[in-house]
Length: 469
Image 1 (cartoon, rainbow, N blue to C red):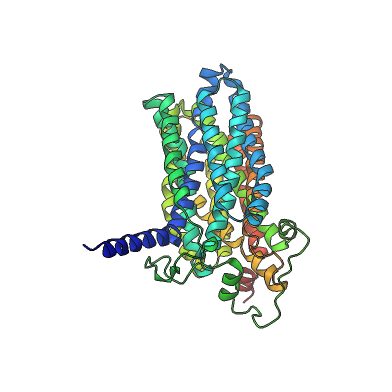
Image 2 (image 1 turned 120 degrees about the vertical axis):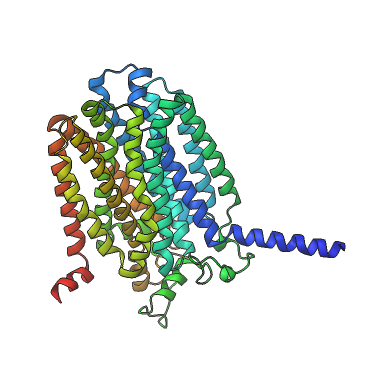
């Protein structure tokens, strides 16, 4: 083959690889793997914590619930503090890739510290690093997806990201418990570090299409999910997808002196979503905080059985892309109201798991499965709807958020809300379970879920219109 032909083939191959590395498909893969790896490793230590506290730190059993709550709340506190910092610098910086990689370093450091932990202080520092890492993964990852996807594709795209998060969060404890029971303590962290290695490679390969003008247009993509049009910046995407916006009017390119994160925080529309996110995280961490201790004390189960409980919670997460398509068709608010409402009977029935009988065990597992389906539909509509306040503010004052928009800062606020829930959830659930009992705790969670569903319904013009029609 002539040299010119060989060079042409090589150039064509390089161009195809470059295009794929900046494609919507690859960015969704990278973000999904990044969030999966972060929450998977975070969750792997959940069933390990009681064993570490008892066997390595030699703490008495009556302190297990207190330390479980403390370590989970530490993670939430670190996530709360670091989210706005990560969001601000991600929107202001020239690239989202660098802070994305910094988050990965934090994950690796936390994993190694947990592996070598010999004191509660070391475990607290490790959980803090995990909180910083999740701030980077969640804030920057979701911002990358919103930067890349068209509005009418966002639900399905976020469905895959949400599925990876749900599976990682629940499969992490499952595999962690199984590995600890079957292969030993060290095997858990070897798997975690191997996953981090895969994550490193993918993040280094990723190219941000909005920051690479030389990259070929993405209109040629053929993937069914991602077929509709090129990757464009948020402001253009928002105007293209909202025909009611005044595209003919004057457009200001002068950003407001008030930081976008402050403007978004005082938005009534966003505030409702943030409150719902706090509740979502609090309910989620209720399971993480109380289920391991509950099954140890009630059923005399060990790490393997604890891991299987979280595996049961994991399996329904495979429906997240389907939930995403429903959101794209009917809107996120209807889905979120339905999901929160479905948690009410589940929590009410949990209080009837009171003994070690076969009937109680079957009921417990069945309710875990039901909760898994509900959780698959709770978070996704909230994170999809987070972008709507940005569009509304941009419509009212074009250019108010600057050239790069405020996607990362919006998801930083969501991260702060989630962190607040993770901070409050373990404390409230742990305290209720220890002082008032398992049954009372579940009744409180049922009331909270019902109140959140009602709040979301009453603040939705679409849902109010359905009942008033």
